[in-house]
Length: 442
Image (cartoon, rainbow, N blue to C red; front, top):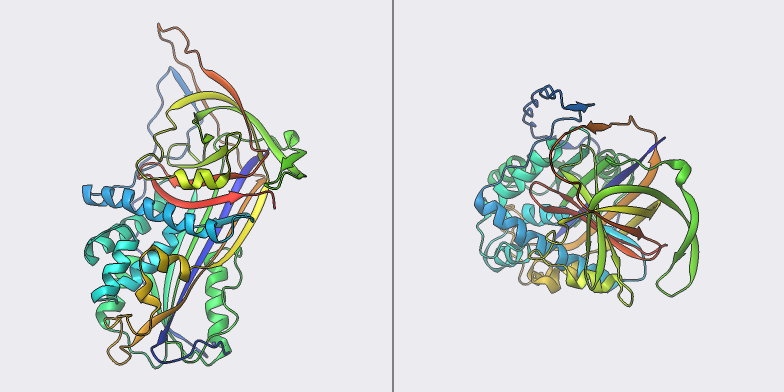
């Protein structure tokens, strides 16, 4: 018996150029100067309490909720809307292929940029992220809360978030800027010689390490005229709470968007899970790890609907409210791997931050005093997700209770993801959307 396991790596790259220079690529140090933030020691969770006599449990790891202020909880809804808006833009650019993205990864990089921005550039970044006129300190505190708390919500789930700000050796970063990206984004700060290939190797090595080998390379070369490179990596690995039996996995037909069919390995199980159904899609919530903090919601279009219809319907107001029903569901979902490589310049500009890419309008004067005229030449994201069946230790829970109530009559239904679908991975205590993707069968 094996558990299905999900592994996901996301890598985001932003490159800043001096105004007046071209962005033609040329070959990246011998020994880069690196400032690495000191990670605070996370508080060790307390030992689980002993179960009562009426409950027989093989204890799951103790979990903890992400603690946010009321202002930060409001930011979650606004930032989730940014996530859905960004994914709509990505899907509109190419809706034929499977893809995966982490809007939160984009938010972290924009947040680091925001600390160096002023005037219209700062206003546009805050607006695109969904924070309206939210001040930099509030945005920084929100990002810091997620970066520090999300990885320790569930000991049985691996989440790693890493940031790096790499400056060309001729750029003297302002102390305030370095302190902000280090304190609030746990970012490494490096000084590199962008004319040396060793700098390319250094950044690709950082990418390979932080993505656990899922994304071994993010750049082929650096332009010596580039001034700054900002990167974010997010790595997520978890087993399903409800295991799939590998013996139940069989090759079955999967109908592609164009109506043709292909054979894919379909994992199968029957489970008591959260379920929803509406005019646009039916959906299930598959939990990870201990079962109460992380889940992947899989949304399957109803007859006559498409994945685009699902994506266009998603808003923070309605998201998550539909999954209130518990049902006995016969589940079939493909084993799959998806890799994405997308340049986000056009999407972010259309969402409301065009000035960051404009040499005449960008204002990042708070990054460096000796190199005031920055603009962003490229924001690029590479992402990979792997949903597979790999051996892990099985964790089980057996609960025995007695009460005077009649058993509930539960809905029984099939959820067979044998056509293109949307999936969303989120942290449940905060409702923050971490990843969004579609699987098209290719």
